[in-house]
Image 1 (cartoon, rainbow, N blue to C red):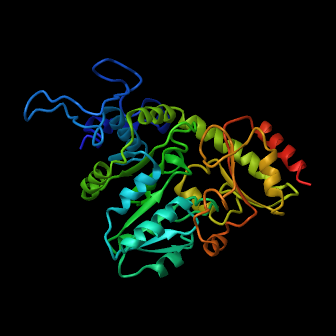
Image 2 (image 1 turned 90 degrees about the vertical axis):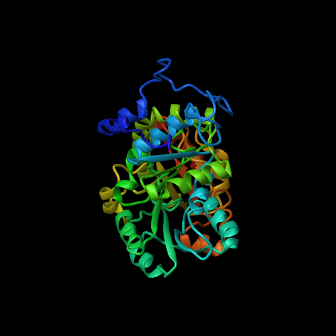
Length: 394
């Protein structure tokens, strides 16, 4: 398929991640020499004659701008096939099309609330069953396997509690039963983690977040190296019509060019702010995978190259929540993550509002939990903004 990486692209895998993010799958467009991939804003393409083709026909199925993005994300994730969707949820929905009524999936319990809603409110009605568990507990994962378990779906680190799941062990468990492992790699991006190298069968992303990186577009991805799944996934993308538009593909390509420098800055800032929050008198606990006393700190060191820019923390007093959100100014109260601007989110009513209360509380999402996506601003300015906002929590 045109979304597969071409044989000539194999040499690109020898380049460093920093270089690949800048140049993508293709250094320039051969026909015109354009360094920036053109936006092919066309819904349809002319055929030279009956039985003849340029390789393109209709943009829902294939588009040159999106194809370059798909090849680029495949390179970054060390896969052979990349598929770009209008949103991350569109990508996940197409993954579920690989299964059938009666199949059982094990899912990380503290994952994005939209994924929970998609699985529990929609696919459950078609006969799918789901076990929502703490997948960072590999013994619990093993105990949750059933004869009809066909997949394990993990977020690692998880959203928002920053739990880390052992990708290698999860892959071993599900592969021993002929199933597949799906890993949501949104929080770390391919710059810090490559789940396919660790045994995952499919990697999904909300490209809206770190990959695009500028809070100006939506996108989603599936990446894999499974020829036996390729046709089903391409057909799901084409048939459901959730494929990414040419302009949004171009915006995501442009964002990826600075992925390496952004991720390094996100992490540098997050490390400083996480330690600062840990010492603040109004903060009870901070969740950050870069802490040496994080329960899965050593595991992170074996499967990722960094800790990312995401922090969650408990306030000591729930009454401080509206005051903190009202008084931040540089940091923005908004529902998303991974952009150059720092965003503070209240998971209880925003990202995880669709999850039932008992399940939320079991996972740790209570009325004092805040989630901070640390941007690339000056860390001193971000700390000053938090400090000022906290000073008004009286």
